[in-house]
Length: 202
Image 1: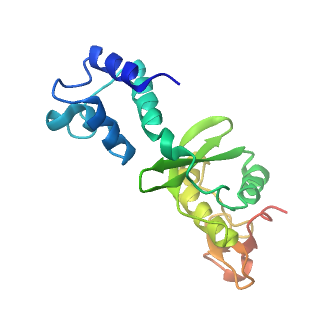
Image 2: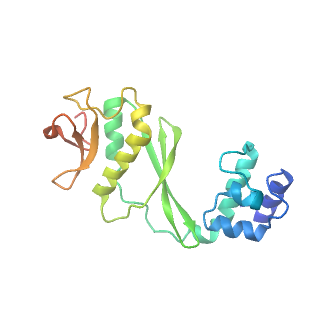
Protein backbone atom coordinates (compact mmCIF):
# COMPACT_ATOMS: atom_id res chain seq x y z
CA UNK A 1 0.00 0.00 0.00
CA UNK A 2 1.35 3.42 -0.99
CA UNK A 3 2.08 6.13 1.55
CA UNK A 4 -0.96 8.35 2.03
CA UNK A 5 1.04 11.55 1.60
CA UNK A 6 2.26 10.42 -1.83
CA UNK A 7 -1.33 9.73 -2.90
CA UNK A 8 -2.44 13.10 -1.54
CA UNK A 9 0.37 14.85 -3.42
CA UNK A 10 -0.68 13.22 -6.69
CA UNK A 11 -4.26 14.32 -6.09
CA UNK A 12 -3.00 17.85 -5.49
CA UNK A 13 -1.08 17.77 -8.78
CA UNK A 14 -4.19 16.58 -10.59
CA UNK A 15 -6.08 19.65 -9.41
CA UNK A 16 -8.56 17.79 -7.23
CA UNK A 17 -7.38 19.33 -3.92
CA UNK A 18 -7.88 22.99 -3.08
CA UNK A 19 -4.93 24.85 -1.61
CA UNK A 20 -6.36 25.39 1.89
CA UNK A 21 -6.89 21.67 2.61
CA UNK A 22 -4.26 19.82 4.65
CA UNK A 23 -3.39 16.12 4.65
CA UNK A 24 -4.06 15.48 8.36
CA UNK A 25 -7.47 17.13 8.28
CA UNK A 26 -8.43 15.16 5.15
CA UNK A 27 -7.43 11.84 6.69
CA UNK A 28 -9.36 12.59 9.88
CA UNK A 29 -12.52 13.31 7.88
CA UNK A 30 -12.10 10.21 5.70
CA UNK A 31 -11.78 8.01 8.78
CA UNK A 32 -15.20 9.22 9.89
CA UNK A 33 -16.80 8.39 6.54
CA UNK A 34 -16.94 11.83 4.92
CA UNK A 35 -17.23 11.77 1.09
CA UNK A 36 -13.67 12.22 -0.23
CA UNK A 37 -14.63 14.50 -3.12
CA UNK A 38 -16.15 16.97 -0.64
CA UNK A 39 -13.33 16.67 1.88
CA UNK A 40 -10.70 17.50 -0.74
CA UNK A 41 -12.73 20.47 -1.89
CA UNK A 42 -12.63 22.02 1.58
CA UNK A 43 -14.91 24.99 2.09
CA UNK A 44 -15.08 25.35 -1.70
CA UNK A 45 -16.20 21.77 -2.27
CA UNK A 46 -18.92 21.20 -4.88
CA UNK A 47 -22.33 19.75 -4.23
CA UNK A 48 -22.42 15.96 -4.62
CA UNK A 49 -22.50 14.92 -8.25
CA UNK A 50 -21.38 18.21 -9.79
CA UNK A 51 -17.72 17.35 -10.37
CA UNK A 52 -16.52 14.95 -13.05
CA UNK A 53 -13.29 13.12 -12.19
CA UNK A 54 -11.01 10.89 -14.20
CA UNK A 55 -10.56 7.15 -13.73
CA UNK A 56 -7.10 7.79 -12.28
CA UNK A 57 -8.45 10.33 -9.80
CA UNK A 58 -11.13 7.82 -8.76
CA UNK A 59 -8.41 5.23 -8.14
CA UNK A 60 -6.40 7.70 -6.08
CA UNK A 61 -9.45 8.60 -3.99
CA UNK A 62 -10.12 4.93 -3.26
CA UNK A 63 -6.46 4.40 -2.30
CA UNK A 64 -6.50 7.40 0.03
CA UNK A 65 -9.69 6.22 1.74
CA UNK A 66 -8.16 2.75 2.19
CA UNK A 67 -5.05 4.24 3.80
CA UNK A 68 -7.17 6.35 6.16
CA UNK A 69 -9.13 3.31 7.32
CA UNK A 70 -6.21 0.91 7.80
CA UNK A 71 -6.12 1.32 11.61
CA UNK A 72 -9.79 0.40 11.81
CA UNK A 73 -10.23 -2.10 8.96
CA UNK A 74 -9.35 -5.05 11.20
CA UNK A 75 -11.54 -3.98 14.10
CA UNK A 76 -14.81 -5.30 12.68
CA UNK A 77 -16.64 -8.51 13.57
CA UNK A 78 -14.63 -11.69 13.12
CA UNK A 79 -17.22 -13.23 10.79
CA UNK A 80 -19.35 -11.72 8.03
CA UNK A 81 -23.14 -11.75 8.44
CA UNK A 82 -24.61 -15.24 8.75
CA UNK A 83 -27.05 -14.97 5.87
CA UNK A 84 -27.67 -18.11 3.75
CA UNK A 85 -27.73 -16.15 0.50
CA UNK A 86 -26.85 -19.19 -1.62
CA UNK A 87 -30.46 -20.35 -1.27
CA UNK A 88 -31.61 -17.18 -3.02
CA UNK A 89 -28.92 -17.65 -5.69
CA UNK A 90 -30.14 -21.20 -6.29
CA UNK A 91 -33.70 -19.95 -6.83
CA UNK A 92 -32.51 -17.35 -9.32
CA UNK A 93 -30.39 -19.87 -11.24
CA UNK A 94 -33.22 -22.43 -11.49
CA UNK A 95 -36.00 -20.05 -12.48
CA UNK A 96 -34.21 -17.34 -14.48
CA UNK A 97 -30.90 -18.87 -15.54
CA UNK A 98 -28.92 -16.04 -13.92
CA UNK A 99 -25.84 -16.42 -11.73
CA UNK A 100 -25.83 -14.39 -8.51
CA UNK A 101 -22.71 -13.83 -6.42
CA UNK A 102 -22.36 -11.82 -3.23
CA UNK A 103 -19.25 -10.67 -1.39
CA UNK A 104 -19.10 -9.04 2.04
CA UNK A 105 -16.40 -6.68 3.26
CA UNK A 106 -16.08 -4.61 6.41
CA UNK A 107 -15.98 -0.80 6.20
CA UNK A 108 -14.24 0.30 9.38
CA UNK A 109 -14.34 3.76 10.91
CA UNK A 110 -13.05 5.37 14.08
CA UNK A 111 -16.36 4.83 15.90
CA UNK A 112 -17.37 1.51 14.38
CA UNK A 113 -18.28 0.41 10.88
CA UNK A 114 -20.61 -1.72 8.85
CA UNK A 115 -20.66 -4.62 6.42
CA UNK A 116 -20.93 -3.89 2.70
CA UNK A 117 -22.68 -6.44 0.49
CA UNK A 118 -21.43 -6.33 -3.12
CA UNK A 119 -23.62 -7.89 -5.81
CA UNK A 120 -22.71 -9.34 -9.20
CA UNK A 121 -24.95 -10.96 -11.82
CA UNK A 122 -23.43 -13.30 -14.40
CA UNK A 123 -20.00 -12.05 -13.37
CA UNK A 124 -20.83 -8.36 -13.83
CA UNK A 125 -20.69 -6.07 -10.78
CA UNK A 126 -24.03 -4.36 -10.09
CA UNK A 127 -23.33 -2.35 -6.95
CA UNK A 128 -23.91 -2.93 -3.28
CA UNK A 129 -25.53 -1.87 -0.04
CA UNK A 130 -24.56 -1.64 3.60
CA UNK A 131 -26.14 -4.15 5.97
CA UNK A 132 -26.48 -4.40 9.74
CA UNK A 133 -27.18 -8.10 10.14
CA UNK A 134 -25.39 -10.21 12.71
CA UNK A 135 -25.02 -13.88 13.48
CA UNK A 136 -28.19 -14.30 15.55
CA UNK A 137 -30.97 -14.31 12.91
CA UNK A 138 -29.88 -15.80 9.57
CA UNK A 139 -33.46 -16.36 8.34
CA UNK A 140 -34.47 -12.78 9.12
CA UNK A 141 -31.31 -11.59 7.40
CA UNK A 142 -32.21 -13.63 4.31
CA UNK A 143 -35.68 -12.04 4.16
CA UNK A 144 -34.14 -8.57 4.34
CA UNK A 145 -31.50 -9.46 1.74
CA UNK A 146 -34.06 -10.88 -0.70
CA UNK A 147 -36.22 -7.79 -0.33
CA UNK A 148 -33.28 -5.45 -0.96
CA UNK A 149 -31.99 -7.35 -3.97
CA UNK A 150 -35.41 -7.66 -5.57
CA UNK A 151 -36.28 -4.00 -5.09
CA UNK A 152 -32.83 -2.69 -5.98
CA UNK A 153 -31.79 -4.94 -8.85
CA UNK A 154 -33.58 -8.18 -9.68
CA UNK A 155 -36.99 -6.76 -10.61
CA UNK A 156 -35.23 -4.75 -13.32
CA UNK A 157 -32.41 -7.10 -14.30
CA UNK A 158 -34.68 -10.09 -14.92
CA UNK A 159 -37.14 -9.49 -17.76
CA UNK A 160 -40.72 -9.45 -16.48
CA UNK A 161 -39.63 -9.13 -12.84
CA UNK A 162 -38.37 -11.70 -10.38
CA UNK A 163 -39.50 -13.80 -8.64
CA UNK A 164 -42.89 -14.54 -10.16
CA UNK A 165 -45.25 -17.12 -8.73
CA UNK A 166 -45.10 -20.49 -10.49
CA UNK A 167 -48.89 -20.95 -10.18
CA UNK A 168 -49.71 -17.31 -10.95
CA UNK A 169 -47.11 -16.23 -13.55
CA UNK A 170 -48.33 -12.63 -13.69
CA UNK A 171 -48.08 -12.12 -9.93
CA UNK A 172 -44.82 -11.24 -8.17
CA UNK A 173 -43.67 -12.89 -4.97
CA UNK A 174 -42.11 -11.14 -2.01
CA UNK A 175 -39.84 -12.19 0.82
CA UNK A 176 -41.40 -12.76 4.22
CA UNK A 177 -40.85 -14.73 7.41
CA UNK A 178 -42.95 -17.86 7.50
CA UNK A 179 -44.73 -19.23 10.54
CA UNK A 180 -42.08 -21.95 10.68
CA UNK A 181 -39.38 -19.34 11.23
CA UNK A 182 -37.95 -19.88 7.74
CA UNK A 183 -37.52 -17.24 5.02
CA UNK A 184 -40.25 -17.62 2.39
CA UNK A 185 -41.43 -16.30 -0.96
CA UNK A 186 -45.06 -15.21 -0.53
CA UNK A 187 -47.58 -14.92 -3.40
CA UNK A 188 -49.89 -11.90 -3.42
CA UNK A 189 -52.60 -13.88 -5.24
CA UNK A 190 -52.77 -16.82 -2.84
CA UNK A 191 -50.82 -16.90 0.40
CA UNK A 192 -51.06 -20.69 0.48
CA UNK A 193 -48.66 -20.76 -2.48
CA UNK A 194 -45.76 -19.53 -0.34
CA UNK A 195 -42.46 -21.28 -1.08
CA UNK A 196 -39.39 -21.46 1.13
CA UNK A 197 -36.50 -19.42 -0.24
CA UNK A 198 -34.17 -21.99 -1.73
CA UNK A 199 -37.02 -24.20 -3.00
CA UNK A 200 -38.44 -22.04 -5.80
CA UNK A 201 -38.84 -23.97 -9.04
CA UNK A 202 -38.40 -27.42 -7.48
